[in-house]
Length: 240
Image 1: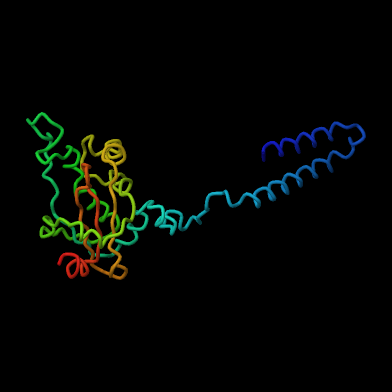
Image 2: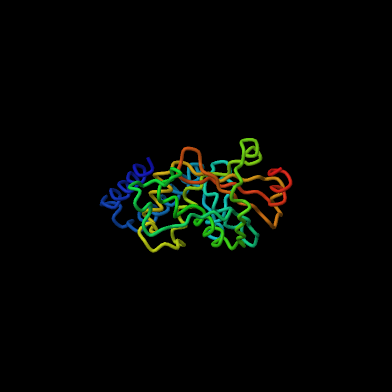
Protein backbone atom coordinates (compact mmCIF):
# COMPACT_ATOMS: atom_id res chain seq x y z
CA UNK A 1 0.00 0.00 0.00
CA UNK A 2 2.84 2.37 0.85
CA UNK A 3 4.41 1.86 -2.58
CA UNK A 4 1.08 2.41 -4.35
CA UNK A 5 0.47 5.71 -2.53
CA UNK A 6 4.02 6.88 -3.18
CA UNK A 7 3.65 6.09 -6.89
CA UNK A 8 0.33 7.94 -7.00
CA UNK A 9 1.99 11.03 -5.48
CA UNK A 10 4.83 10.78 -8.02
CA UNK A 11 2.42 10.43 -10.94
CA UNK A 12 0.46 13.47 -9.73
CA UNK A 13 3.64 15.54 -9.54
CA UNK A 14 4.78 14.33 -12.97
CA UNK A 15 1.40 15.26 -14.48
CA UNK A 16 1.48 18.71 -12.88
CA UNK A 17 4.91 19.38 -14.37
CA UNK A 18 3.45 18.80 -17.86
CA UNK A 19 0.49 21.17 -17.53
CA UNK A 20 1.36 24.20 -19.69
CA UNK A 21 -0.26 26.76 -17.39
CA UNK A 22 1.92 25.52 -14.49
CA UNK A 23 5.16 25.47 -16.50
CA UNK A 24 6.57 28.45 -14.59
CA UNK A 25 5.72 26.79 -11.28
CA UNK A 26 7.97 23.69 -11.73
CA UNK A 27 10.16 24.61 -8.75
CA UNK A 28 7.16 24.99 -6.48
CA UNK A 29 5.67 21.71 -7.75
CA UNK A 30 8.91 19.80 -7.05
CA UNK A 31 9.17 21.43 -3.63
CA UNK A 32 5.61 20.47 -2.76
CA UNK A 33 6.28 16.92 -4.02
CA UNK A 34 9.37 16.59 -1.80
CA UNK A 35 7.54 17.94 1.26
CA UNK A 36 4.57 15.67 0.52
CA UNK A 37 6.77 12.59 0.32
CA UNK A 38 8.51 13.42 3.59
CA UNK A 39 5.20 13.98 5.38
CA UNK A 40 3.68 10.88 3.83
CA UNK A 41 6.49 8.56 4.98
CA UNK A 42 6.65 10.20 8.40
CA UNK A 43 2.93 9.67 9.01
CA UNK A 44 3.03 6.15 7.56
CA UNK A 45 5.98 5.07 9.71
CA UNK A 46 4.45 6.52 12.89
CA UNK A 47 1.22 4.61 12.25
CA UNK A 48 3.05 1.32 11.56
CA UNK A 49 5.88 1.62 14.10
CA UNK A 50 4.43 -1.26 16.11
CA UNK A 51 5.19 -3.60 13.20
CA UNK A 52 8.85 -2.61 12.96
CA UNK A 53 11.41 -4.97 14.51
CA UNK A 54 13.02 -3.71 17.74
CA UNK A 55 16.10 -1.60 17.15
CA UNK A 56 19.01 -2.04 19.55
CA UNK A 57 21.73 0.54 19.96
CA UNK A 58 25.11 -0.49 18.49
CA UNK A 59 26.72 -0.63 21.92
CA UNK A 60 24.38 -3.40 23.11
CA UNK A 61 23.33 -5.08 19.89
CA UNK A 62 25.30 -8.25 20.59
CA UNK A 63 24.58 -8.19 24.31
CA UNK A 64 21.93 -10.26 26.00
CA UNK A 65 18.43 -8.84 25.54
CA UNK A 66 15.66 -9.37 28.09
CA UNK A 67 13.38 -10.73 25.36
CA UNK A 68 15.69 -13.71 24.83
CA UNK A 69 14.69 -15.24 28.18
CA UNK A 70 11.06 -15.76 27.15
CA UNK A 71 11.95 -16.97 23.65
CA UNK A 72 14.90 -19.18 24.68
CA UNK A 73 17.16 -17.51 22.13
CA UNK A 74 20.91 -17.00 22.21
CA UNK A 75 21.83 -18.15 25.74
CA UNK A 76 25.47 -17.67 24.73
CA UNK A 77 24.89 -13.89 24.50
CA UNK A 78 24.25 -13.96 28.26
CA UNK A 79 26.68 -16.72 29.24
CA UNK A 80 29.62 -15.09 27.50
CA UNK A 81 29.29 -12.15 29.90
CA UNK A 82 28.19 -14.23 32.88
CA UNK A 83 31.18 -16.61 32.84
CA UNK A 84 33.78 -13.84 32.54
CA UNK A 85 36.08 -13.72 35.56
CA UNK A 86 34.47 -16.70 37.31
CA UNK A 87 36.00 -20.04 38.22
CA UNK A 88 34.12 -22.88 36.49
CA UNK A 89 34.46 -26.51 37.57
CA UNK A 90 33.76 -29.09 34.88
CA UNK A 91 34.21 -32.83 34.35
CA UNK A 92 37.50 -33.93 32.85
CA UNK A 93 36.17 -36.64 30.56
CA UNK A 94 37.10 -35.73 27.00
CA UNK A 95 37.48 -38.71 24.71
CA UNK A 96 40.90 -39.82 23.59
CA UNK A 97 40.67 -38.84 19.93
CA UNK A 98 42.48 -40.95 17.36
CA UNK A 99 43.46 -39.96 13.83
CA UNK A 100 41.46 -42.88 12.50
CA UNK A 101 38.08 -42.83 14.18
CA UNK A 102 36.83 -46.27 15.21
CA UNK A 103 39.71 -47.81 13.30
CA UNK A 104 38.91 -51.36 12.31
CA UNK A 105 35.35 -51.27 13.64
CA UNK A 106 33.73 -50.55 10.29
CA UNK A 107 31.13 -48.25 11.83
CA UNK A 108 30.55 -44.55 12.47
CA UNK A 109 29.52 -45.27 16.07
CA UNK A 110 31.66 -46.14 19.06
CA UNK A 111 31.03 -48.90 21.58
CA UNK A 112 28.75 -46.58 23.60
CA UNK A 113 26.59 -45.75 20.60
CA UNK A 114 27.97 -42.24 20.07
CA UNK A 115 28.41 -40.90 16.55
CA UNK A 116 32.10 -40.47 15.76
CA UNK A 117 32.02 -36.64 15.81
CA UNK A 118 30.84 -36.80 19.42
CA UNK A 119 34.28 -38.12 20.36
CA UNK A 120 35.85 -34.94 19.00
CA UNK A 121 33.30 -32.45 20.26
CA UNK A 122 32.43 -33.88 23.69
CA UNK A 123 33.77 -31.60 26.47
CA UNK A 124 36.32 -29.89 24.22
CA UNK A 125 33.89 -27.39 22.73
CA UNK A 126 32.50 -26.33 26.10
CA UNK A 127 36.04 -25.80 27.38
CA UNK A 128 36.69 -23.64 24.31
CA UNK A 129 33.53 -21.65 24.97
CA UNK A 130 34.51 -21.09 28.60
CA UNK A 131 38.03 -20.03 27.61
CA UNK A 132 36.57 -17.63 25.05
CA UNK A 133 34.31 -16.24 27.78
CA UNK A 134 37.39 -15.53 29.95
CA UNK A 135 36.42 -18.02 32.63
CA UNK A 136 38.98 -19.91 34.71
CA UNK A 137 38.35 -23.56 33.87
CA UNK A 138 39.04 -26.20 36.54
CA UNK A 139 38.79 -29.74 35.13
CA UNK A 140 37.70 -31.90 38.04
CA UNK A 141 37.71 -35.65 37.44
CA UNK A 142 35.52 -36.06 40.55
CA UNK A 143 32.65 -34.72 38.42
CA UNK A 144 33.16 -37.31 35.67
CA UNK A 145 30.73 -39.84 37.10
CA UNK A 146 28.07 -37.36 38.24
CA UNK A 147 24.75 -38.15 36.57
CA UNK A 148 21.89 -35.88 37.58
CA UNK A 149 18.71 -37.66 38.52
CA UNK A 150 15.29 -36.46 37.42
CA UNK A 151 14.79 -35.09 40.93
CA UNK A 152 18.07 -33.14 40.79
CA UNK A 153 17.21 -31.75 37.35
CA UNK A 154 14.19 -30.05 38.89
CA UNK A 155 16.57 -27.51 40.44
CA UNK A 156 17.39 -26.25 36.94
CA UNK A 157 15.43 -24.01 34.59
CA UNK A 158 15.56 -24.37 30.81
CA UNK A 159 17.58 -21.42 29.54
CA UNK A 160 17.44 -22.14 25.82
CA UNK A 161 18.99 -24.07 22.97
CA UNK A 162 22.74 -24.71 23.00
CA UNK A 163 23.02 -25.67 19.32
CA UNK A 164 24.36 -22.37 17.99
CA UNK A 165 26.43 -21.79 21.12
CA UNK A 166 28.38 -24.97 20.41
CA UNK A 167 28.32 -24.61 16.63
CA UNK A 168 30.31 -21.40 16.68
CA UNK A 169 33.11 -22.91 18.73
CA UNK A 170 34.52 -24.28 15.47
CA UNK A 171 36.61 -21.10 15.27
CA UNK A 172 38.49 -22.32 18.38
CA UNK A 173 38.74 -25.99 17.43
CA UNK A 174 42.05 -27.76 18.10
CA UNK A 175 41.49 -30.05 15.11
CA UNK A 176 43.10 -29.43 11.73
CA UNK A 177 41.13 -32.12 9.89
CA UNK A 178 37.83 -31.67 8.13
CA UNK A 179 35.94 -32.36 11.39
CA UNK A 180 37.34 -29.05 12.63
CA UNK A 181 35.72 -26.90 9.94
CA UNK A 182 32.52 -24.91 10.13
CA UNK A 183 30.57 -27.24 7.84
CA UNK A 184 30.96 -30.23 10.15
CA UNK A 185 30.02 -28.13 13.17
CA UNK A 186 26.95 -26.75 11.42
CA UNK A 187 25.82 -30.19 10.27
CA UNK A 188 26.40 -31.86 13.64
CA UNK A 189 24.92 -29.22 15.93
CA UNK A 190 22.10 -27.89 13.76
CA UNK A 191 21.05 -30.82 11.58
CA UNK A 192 22.11 -34.14 13.07
CA UNK A 193 21.73 -34.01 16.84
CA UNK A 194 18.33 -32.44 17.34
CA UNK A 195 17.89 -30.28 20.43
CA UNK A 196 20.73 -29.53 22.85
CA UNK A 197 19.78 -27.36 25.85
CA UNK A 198 21.29 -25.12 28.51
CA UNK A 199 19.84 -25.42 32.02
CA UNK A 200 20.61 -23.02 34.89
CA UNK A 201 19.97 -23.39 38.60
CA UNK A 202 19.08 -19.79 39.62
CA UNK A 203 19.55 -20.31 43.38
CA UNK A 204 22.61 -18.58 44.84
CA UNK A 205 24.10 -18.03 41.38
CA UNK A 206 23.95 -14.27 40.80
CA UNK A 207 27.03 -13.37 42.84
CA UNK A 208 28.71 -16.78 42.90
CA UNK A 209 32.40 -16.68 42.04
CA UNK A 210 32.65 -20.46 41.62
CA UNK A 211 30.35 -22.35 39.27
CA UNK A 212 29.80 -25.94 38.18
CA UNK A 213 29.05 -26.83 34.57
CA UNK A 214 28.01 -30.42 33.91
CA UNK A 215 27.29 -31.98 30.57
CA UNK A 216 25.04 -34.96 30.17
CA UNK A 217 23.92 -36.88 27.15
CA UNK A 218 20.84 -35.23 25.69
CA UNK A 219 18.05 -37.77 25.59
CA UNK A 220 17.91 -39.68 22.28
CA UNK A 221 20.72 -37.54 20.80
CA UNK A 222 24.46 -37.90 20.18
CA UNK A 223 25.38 -34.77 22.05
CA UNK A 224 25.19 -33.13 25.47
CA UNK A 225 22.94 -30.74 27.29
CA UNK A 226 24.55 -28.45 29.86
CA UNK A 227 23.70 -27.80 33.51
CA UNK A 228 25.02 -24.70 35.30
CA UNK A 229 24.88 -24.03 39.05
CA UNK A 230 26.85 -22.24 41.73
CA UNK A 231 29.42 -24.61 43.18
CA UNK A 232 28.29 -23.93 46.77
CA UNK A 233 24.65 -24.68 45.98
CA UNK A 234 25.59 -27.71 43.90
CA UNK A 235 27.78 -29.20 46.66
CA UNK A 236 25.45 -28.39 49.56
CA UNK A 237 22.02 -28.95 48.02
CA UNK A 238 21.89 -30.54 44.59
CA UNK A 239 24.57 -33.20 45.08
CA UNK A 240 23.34 -34.24 48.53
